Length: 280
Image 1: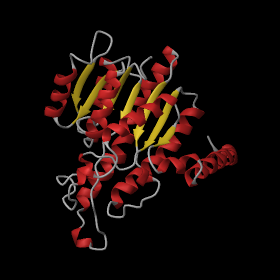
Image 2: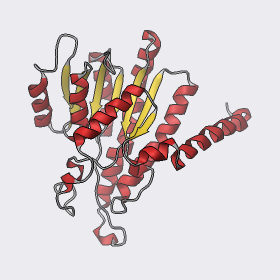
Image 3: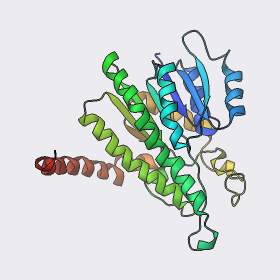
């Protein structure tokens, strides 16, 4: 079976979903570049898998990256493009989740709130903008589809975990932006598949006490990581532009989000026609 991608860059792969997905892709024949802030985690991943999962045709490399350092992202993208011209997939996975109680405003750390929005949404916009020229060029010159894969959240559709309002809002903003990005690339004739994944809660360090001290045994919350990765890989093989694992799958297939997608397609087309005579 052919690998999903020729070479994938995974943003946020030092733990959890990103790390597990990197391991899965490697084991199935995709070359992988992993990134993250923790150099020791990057080194450990490469050390553990370089011999067992790599070969002359399947390679693994690691590049440290602080995704919140927005000014560094264009240089990072340029360096990756130069060193990895066969890159055909970028997986944007970095994310943090924090609790805030706005009913007690004195307890709200707005700097942390801003960091969450930057990590989960703004940095993705900056990174994609920096990498799009390479993906467009590869798709056009080599005549093959390239890929942007976003790890979103079902909480971006229904913000039912009210203790994490910043996380929910950042994922909702990301979802809205992805819908517009996907349509713009289609309108431009670009062969770039934009995929959005809606996970449920998954057992990762996203919920552990180090990151969310108000939770006890938070790492046990949600779906086992291995099960999530296996299901996600199966869905990625199908090639759909968006899919959910867990309860949100119904929302996309026949529920309110399916209806919203239909309304989006109808309205964006109608608005485009109405605005045509005003556009320069």
